[in-house]
Image (cartoon, rainbow, N blue to C red; front, side):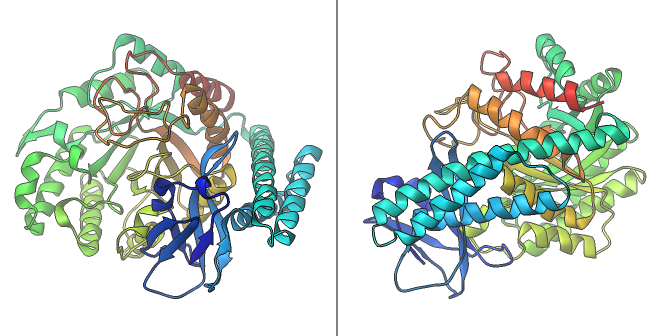
Length: 488
C-alpha cells in the first residue's frame, strides 16, 4: 500500500518505521515500511483491504497514532493527510453518535467544531487535484476534530460521573502507583498517601529470588505492611514479568528446558502467594507475556505458562482475585514479527479453557516505541476500553506517560523520545484529560501508574511521578486532585 506525503518533510523515517496495517478485525500483519521521495510504502505477504496506523504530529496535540479508514490496495498512492483526516473525522462522528444515543448532551461548540471538521474534510476531498491545498484542508480537519474529541470526552466524563454520583456518591475505584523494588523515602511516602488509595507491590522475580531457591522478602514485607497500616488496597505482581530486567539471571540456564522453566515459575509464584495470602486484594499474573521475546518461548509455551501461573495462584489462595496482564492492547508489536495470538485472542483463548480469572489488567506505556504504546486520542482510548469490556470482566489500566524528552540515565529501556513532545506540563495535561475518562468508563475498576520514581533504576525514561531529584512532578498533584474529586 502506498501513500503520498504532503509536504514530504511532514513524515520522518522514525515515524515511518512505526506505521502498520490492520484488517477489519483490527489484527495487524507484519509489514516492511519504507519512506522515499514523499512516498510511504508498506509491504506485506497478503493482498487485502487494510487500515493504516501512523504517528502524526498535530500542532497543540503532539504526536498521535492516527488511523485511516479501511482502504483497498490501488496502483496509485493515497494522499496521506486526506486519509488520516477522513479516518479521524469518522471516529469523531461515530463517537458523538454513540454517546448521544445513550443520552450525552454535547455543547454547541463541540457540534460546531464537528461540523467545521467535516467541512474541512470535504474541501480536502474535492481539492485532491492540488495535493498541497488538499493537505492544508486535511490538517485543519485534524485540528478541529481533535479539539471536538477533547470537548466531547470532557462532557462524557462530567455527565457520566454526575449520573454515577447520584446513584452511589463517589466512585469506589482504585487509583494507585507501583512502589518499585526499594523503600520509599519518607517525603515520597507522605505524598503517595495524599494521592492514591491503592499501591502495586511489584514482587519482581529478580529482586525476590536472588539466587535459585533463596528468597528475600525484606522489601515487599515492609511495603505490604505499610499499605495495610495506611488503608491502601494492595495489588501484587505481575507474577512473573517476562522481561529481561525482571527475570533472575540464573533462569537463562534453563532457556531450552521449558518443563524445568515452568517448575521454577510455579515455585516462585507459590512462594510469593503463600507468604502474602489474605493480604493482597488483587494478584496480577504473567506480565508482558503476549509481547515478550525473552527465553525463546513459543506462543503455545507462553499459553501454558500463563495457565500454570493462574492455577498456582488459585491453588494457594483459592479466594484470591486474579487478573491477567495484557501488554500493548493495540498490538503494535505484531507489525514487526509473526505472532499467532493478538492480545484480544490470547485473552479469549485463555478464558475458553475455563481459567479462573477475576479480571484483566491492560498495560499501556504511552509514548514509548518500541516496547510501549504510541500516544492516541481520547476517543481511541474509549473505544479500546469498550472492546475489552466485551469479556464482561473487571478491567484495570496500568499505564505511564513521559514527563520529559531526551536521554535518562537510570532507564533500562534506551528509548529516544521525540524532542519537544513531552514535558512535565504535557504529562500533567495528559493525566488531567485521560485518567478521569478511564475511571468513569463502565467496567474499569481502577488505574495504576506503572512507575513512581525516576531516581531509582526503572523501565521507561522520564515516566515517574517524582523526578531524578525526587521532586514531585505536576502530574502527581493532578492525580491527587482527581482522587479527591472522584473517589471514595
